[in-house]
Length: 110
Image (tube, rainbow, N blue to C red; front, side, top):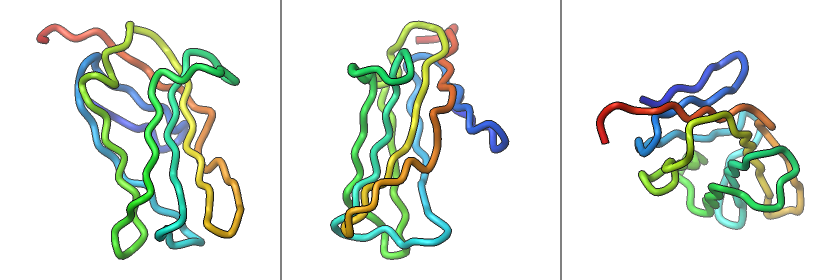
C-alpha cells in the first residue's frame, strides 16, 4: 500500500513495500541537465538521509519517475519527513514539495 494525500502531501507506505510515483511541474518541462531529488530523513534538517533518489532522465513530456524499492522502505514503523527538490540546468533550486510527512506502517505479510 502506498498513498499520497493530495491536501497535505503526506506519503504513507507499508514497511518493505515498493512504490513508484511521477513528478511533473506546471510551469517547466524537465529535461536533460535537470535533477529531481527525493529525500527522506528522520528529522527535518537532517544531514543523514535514510532514502535519497536522484532522477536525471525524464520522459519526452518532462515526467520524472521516482521508484522506491523494498530496501528503501525497510524502515522502522514511524513518521519521517521528505521533500522533493528540483535543480534546473539554468541554476535554479526549487523545493517543490515539503518538508512533508512520510509514514511507514507495519505490515502483516513479509
